[in-house]
Image (cartoon, rainbow, N blue to C red; front, top):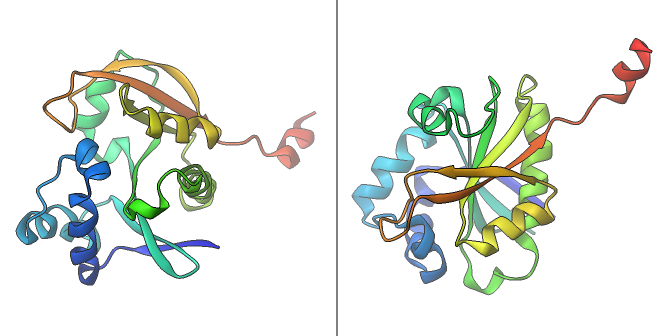
Length: 187
């Protein structure tokens, strides 16, 4: 069973370990020092910023990290997409990693993405869509999005997480499901 909880400061050692794994470091390119992890994950863990960082567990064992936020809460990020795709007000985005190398390539990514997207509709009732930019070269990531039901809606020229990469990104989207009960009430 897949569950998740908010990342706590006690999880920072695990995050440092995951961020140092080659399959994660390639795409996240994150400083793994204790200070950097505390700086970048601490505010969300303490509820001081609007993003949500989740530790994902399978059968109670931590295996992944998912970050979720509204584009509106990070206007610079939304502005970077402006004019390249349609970005609805209140749209949400996610970022994710499978930390445990033994869990990579087993279909876990799409299952986690599907579960987080489904929860997003309840957690953020005004969110019309989940929109996820992913570097074009990160095939495993964009394939996980496709397997989870997101569709490619375009490309975007965005600053990469890893400065060795170019700016080429695919953009994926899934829209809030239409509520059948309200749909039939309008007919």
